[in-house]
Length: 437
Image (cartoon, rainbow, N blue to C red; front, side):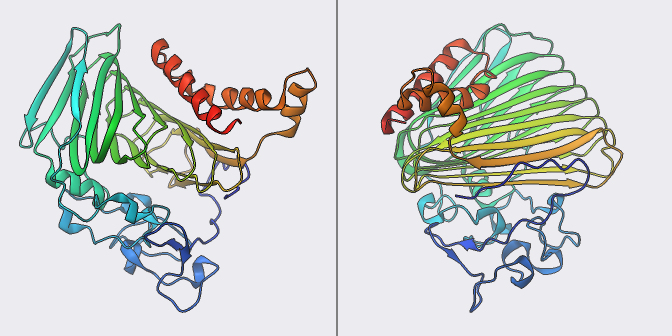
């Protein structure tokens, strides 16, 4: 278990994180970066992988090929799979991910059958199935890693969901994605919220799949959009999803990730501001059981002035080899004066044998901002909370469940869909009952 104390850095980048060797493809043992000894600090480690060369900085995990300053903005982006080198597990973006459990999403042709897509939507929403040549594809996203690029290269059709301009939807748009095969597949979804529209869209992943998925989200000027991505897969599923959002002037965007099921689930949500006045909220909830790997790597790109963002992810872990990963990157570019941003991650470890890795990163290129901060904390139950409940006659096992419910309920309440909130509350109860916590 990685334990990081809560700290808030108002101005400037965080202090350097302790150096962590890259994972092997098994994802279980740390290994040196192609050296005869195991380095203990970043200064002792040689540049390696996609961050090496002129862009590599010994004190930083960020950057991209050919970028001299190692900024998060320098990450390689391309629609072409060939532009991304084969993965070894030593790359910064993949050092926590057990590559052998990806079932070839990073290395094989994705020729399997993608999950079926069933959309239920009120009036004012247009749902289309289009070919890859459709002009709306690529407006909001470019692949940032090899798995995403592999999916981009192999998808044959996309589902495009458009909320028409000025439509104020009363009910949510339900998008149920049902997998029925473990053969590696690619999927592409495009969500467009046109000017001054307001909508809530639920991406409900269920069944069995081996899937690399790209989700493009375009929030036009003055629009308000909530996207809820629910991963309640069967236990044998592997799912990698890049979910990139592009925000227009004075738009409001809320993104909520809930990961409960699957063998390995890796989400990389990102939000990019393109015009002033936009606001973004990014929330996440995850609950990992024995042997399960749940990973979230998010990016907030403040590229223009006077925008706001708030990030809060919470996770619980139980069982041997349960593993969660949260990496939060927030970049405030030189042009982004007046930015107000904060990100936080909280992890609650319920049993021995579980591990939570949490890495908040804050990169600031201008001091003319309203505020910027980050925090991370990983720990066990608060003994005082348990004592308080048990002193009032509540049995220990019930008290523990109450603490976990309260811890995760802050995220569930952000969904604002009563039926879905009830469903997720019941799912959390089942997770807790599985180990009598």
